Amino acid sequence: MKHFLTAALCAGFLATLVPAGAEAGAIERACRQSDRTAATPGLCNCIQKVANRSLTRSERKTVSKWFSDPHKAQVVRQSSNRSDERLWQRYKAFGDHAARSCG
Image (cartoon, rainbow, N blue to C red; front, side, top):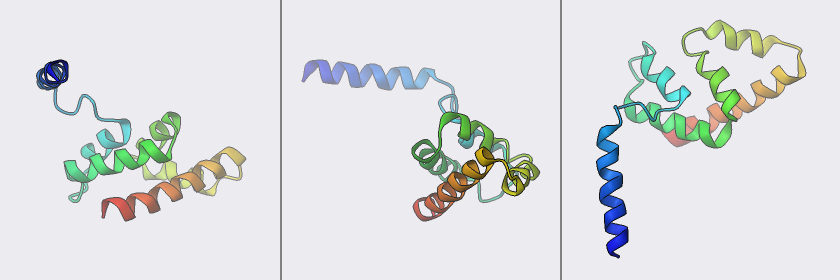
């Protein structure tokens, strides 16, 4: 029990040393930086958590760029490239899951 409490206190102390948002993923950062009024920190964090479960790291990096340039998403959506088609299907599933989970 003593070791658990010590570890918890150390973790709490270290968390105060990390700048806010430093642990945020690519999707969360892009969401927070977007000019959308609904992009609250809580919503962006929720979306990132869903992305972590739904998309690969590479896919999250790609999708995060769509926040600032939605045209890139359109290019992927309209592409006949098989990998783009798979990414779009995974992105749609991620979006549906995020909408259900994050409100």
